[in-house]
Amino acid sequence: MVILPQVPGALPGAPASRPTRRRRALLGPWLALVAFLAALFLAVLMLASVSAQTAEPLVSVRPPEGAVPVAPPTLRAPGVPRRPLGFDAPENTLGSKSDSDIWRAIREGAAGTTSAPRPDDGMLIEGRRPPFVKAPRPEIFTRPPASGLLADFTRADWWARIRNAEAGLPRIGGYFLGVVLAVIVLYAFIRGPMPVEGGFSGRRIRRFRLSQRVVHWSIAIVFILMALTGLALQLGRPFLIPLIGKDAFSVIATASMQAHNLFGPVLIVLLVLLFITFLPGNFPSRADIIWLIKGGGFFGGHAPAGRYNLGEKGWFWTATLIGALLGATGIIMLFPDDLGTRALLEISVFLHGAGALIVIAYLMGHIYLGTYGTEGTFEGMVTGCVDENWARTHHELWLKELEEKGEIEECRE
Image (cartoon, rainbow, N blue to C red; front, side, top):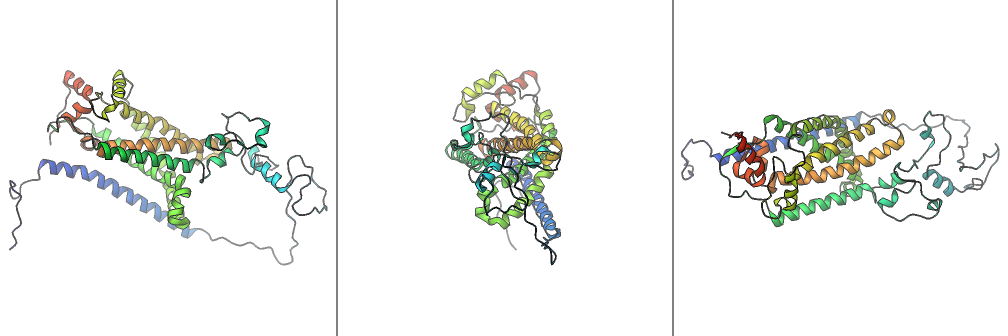
């Protein structure tokens, strides 16, 4: 017979203590979120694998026996007249222009002739400058501009240079997110979680309704999924390929592209629900200035706030407004031939990538403060209830308003 040790003060068969039940309640949504994302990622991987296996193999097309070879058409530089038939020019000679002149003109947007209906189809490499940049002086074509991402906007091949994985937006964006993550980790190491003034009182009051929590966690799951797949697509070449190789990255990129395109429209719908659900209380107020002057309590001290503080309001408007921009540009990128010109597509690609970096950086801070960075915050979005001292510490004005109106709803387990 084995006698198990008994916890002092606990009766056999007694229910779990209140802190234990609370920890279990907080652990459940995290496990569900991890399981959902893992199952979703595996499903996309299986879809990508099946697509790769069912794809038709490449076929080598060879001319039949006895066929007479035909010389390929000769590239002509802009302004150079066509040579008469039967004229055999020496190799690498194109009239008064050399091969380097030809390809330089193509990179700068020189267009040829084509039977396609759209005027942009005769352009091998897009050379149009963004519409918000004025045409440079003529010497810009003979004297290279200063290096750097901002200087690239003045070049004719600005779009290709900004998308360059070695020195363009992908690498700069990766460094930017790395700096943001380093600042968060350093702050967490120095400051630690912000405590509740006076400790937990044990009295819990209602903060979020069930509908608000459902909208929040739904958009949180899709937002994280879109962020991970978008980062894999944008930062894969400069950061992932050197680590895992091209073959492994091709699988990840294919799965990420499918998931990103599939859940993009879902995110647009959820953003509309987020805006409608959390708009009340997110308008600017005079209390936001005081909260900002006192540093939001991040470096000590007490910073009173209403239902939402300035940081939460900033996240709400960033998520909704830049989210709307991401949704609009994403739709243009999904249907480029039907919704706009090539110039509009280029601007959409740039705004989509830059806007996503801003949202992801803000999202990283939001996740930190909502979990480890602030005691008692995560429980509020899981159960809908917060400790009264937590509300007094972080949202004192909101708590006073509820007390004056007699609208405090106490949570009972």
